[in-house]
Image (cartoon, rainbow, N blue to C red; front, side, top):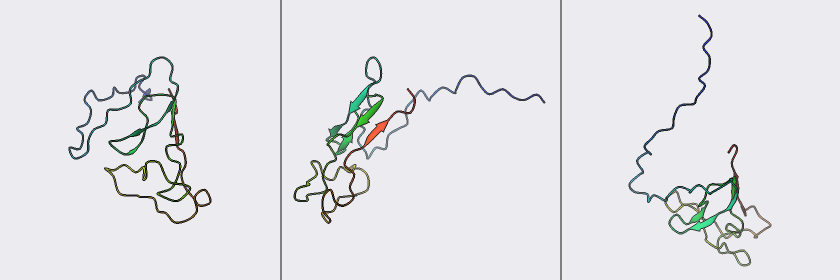
Length: 114
């Protein structure tokens, strides 16, 4: 048998979105930005209580939205705990010393191929 050539076109994506879990509110997906994909800044999502990328772009950065740790003196996190309120609880503690102990201060998500 001759070798089979790989398909030239990838399969089409599904035309209907999956049914969301009825217990979790649905936040609209990011909307495409006009023109070329550019870097985006995350905004605080009051529904999920986390930073969220509201537009499609080449990257999205949390900037200062994650700075801090819990309610520590001289390091209080602006929207503690920045954990999806519909997921598992993962609250920050107040032990340690801010900026001397481990913490995540910023997240940047970058598109691999646009």
